[in-house]
Length: 284
Image: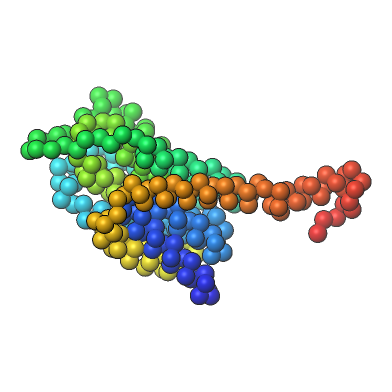
């Protein structure tokens, strides 16, 4: 691998590590960086999931103090997260490359809109004082199971924006539970989903063996730097930057896949012209 491609991979993963530590949404940087470095979308997605997992696990370990009060909630959400991660990664492995290529612009747009929605939501007041706020788990646990399962399927399949989805779900029954506790639970569950998907991708040989260690090392460094950056930069500013980046990326991926210069479109125009007697039937 040449230095330019290696620099793209390392730079994208490092920035993703910083963004995930500060605000979330780092996949919207590392995934296109992997594509720019020459990986096809499907292996780029699998490689990205594997490379970012160690940094995610490190973040989960850092939240162990906040998690001490919330093992009951983790117990409720553990199984649907595990099953959903397995289902999502299996779905990715059986998805034809052309289908995933076509879906990528929409997936990136969904993740970007989720981040935009989070940015526009009014902030919940944090719990203060010594009150022992507890999660108000719904009386219908099957609904929580189903929603978390669906979120986890998406996470195992693509991953970008999964943290935002889970924070929204946790906030819906979290009451005034401190945001750090919500983030701790989200980080652990995201680590579980990404870890399960990473194992599936490694077992299936879907990851790039050269790109993975480069991105993995850079992501870990980025997550450590992000812990320092988080104390100096408002997370909202980082999130707005990622939203802008996601919208630009969606337009770029959509144009590359569906624009007039895409190879499939060129072939289709050539066939149409040939049938109309305007071009020879052989193309290329």
